Amino acid sequence: MKKGKVDALLGIVFGDEGKGKVVDVFTPRYDVVARFAGGPNAGHTIIFDGKKFVLRSIPSGIFDEGKLNVIGNGCVIAPDLFMAEAKELEAAGYDLRSRLHISKRAHLILPTHRVLDRAYEAAKGKNAVGTTGKGIGPTYSEKAARTGLRVGDILENFEAKYAALKARHEQQLRDLHYTDYDITEEEQRWLEGINYMRQFQLTDTEAELNRMLNEGKNILAEGAQGTMLDIDHGTYPFVSSSSTTTGGVCTGLGIAPNRIGEVFGIFKAYSTRVGAGPFPVELFDETGDKIREIGHEYGAVTGRNRRCGWIDLVALKYAIMVNGVTQLIMMKSDVLDGFETIRACVAYQKDGVTTTDMPYDTEGWQAVYKDIKGWQTDLSAITSAADFPEAFRNYIDYLEAELHTPITIVSVGPDREQTIIRQHVS
Ligand code: GDP
Ligand code: IMO
Ligand code: MG
Image 1: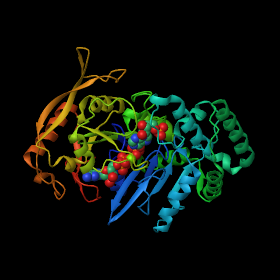
Image 2 (image 1 turned 180 degrees about the vertical axis):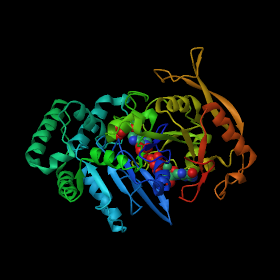
Image 3 (image 1 turned 90 degrees about the horizontal axis):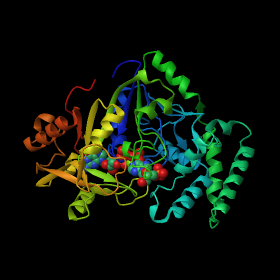
Image 4 (image 1 turned 30 degrees about the vertical axis):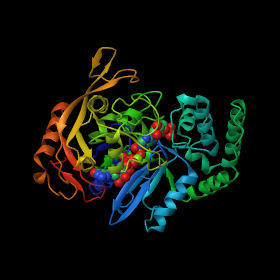
């Protein structure tokens, strides 16, 4: 990485690619790790020394003592969930207060935003998005409507502002005839969370980050969700509500586009999706079940089954284009160890039309596959790219040629140590 730059690490498919693991591995090389979008809909798993953490709002650089971690202005934050997450880390011996700054411009998720999330989903019926129920959509809607509450609001006259917004939400819920809810206990924890957050450094992180860049420090922007869940570039309306792409790094941290250095695009050796929406590569047979079982493809946040399928080169090419990906990171390669043949989706087909470009409406398209010989070797104990079996090397070479982007890191297991650098990462 170059001095004075922001490198981005972005999920480039439907989320859960393994961002948390790689951010944790990368942290020693950076001065700052910053989240720029999303909130507790994210679940980033980090495993080291036999310990496992699932982070939702707190950046995955938090385990490295000397590093600043930032929750940026583009994020949304639920005080009660933040408190639970932070207390767990504090109990495990990590001192957050000295190493975590939260932007005063980040938006607050209210308990009633979560009720509204459920109400909107219920109103959509069979067209429901299958959200994580964390109030993400209603909070970002409120931000765009210019009626939201921000972290900085908790520093002054907060109770009145909260009561006014809550009353508006209650009216909206009555209008939706969604009145069967009780947030009494949740609200108490949430208000406790507000008090707890007051003990943290709530700052103008945008100015801080730019100051640090001017001093030649470097920043790792930790993506949440993935490109295909981006509000603009994903499979709308089956998306999340934030900008998960490189553009979102700039707006979500307050840094200029010419500060962006490397863009790491992270993907799995196969595909998964949680929640509803088009997924042309989805497997409904025992192969899909086998991938789910071996890959433990159950949601880190909701525990839901992740839908599984083969790798999708149409989606990957599109995401590489939208994000300006400079290096690819392939995760969970070990999950495909036992397959005699693996497949890659090279195009979509519908009504006699074949395309390799991401269509406007991904509904109803069928995947066109290329078969690839599996490696049928246990990758999980391999520590050097030189020891990769030939068939696996061929798979990587094929993907690099198709995607016109180098795969510089390959992950062969969930542990920090099971990360293989293939080429020099700048
Ligand atoms: P994130 O949201 O992108 O951070 O990803 P998640 O944490 O939601 O999901 C990734 C899951 O895969 C986690 O359970 C990780 O522990 C696990 N994982 C990450 N890398 C690998 C890998 O290379 N192999 C295997 N088998 N599991 C991995
Ligand atoms: P990480 O950061 C996978 C999905 C939800 C749903 C849609 C909208 O762990 O990769 P939302 O609650 O955001 O309004 O839900 O987006 N979704 C994710 N899927 N990984 C995530 O985050 C996700 N965050 C949201 O399942 O389909
Ligand atoms: Mg996740």
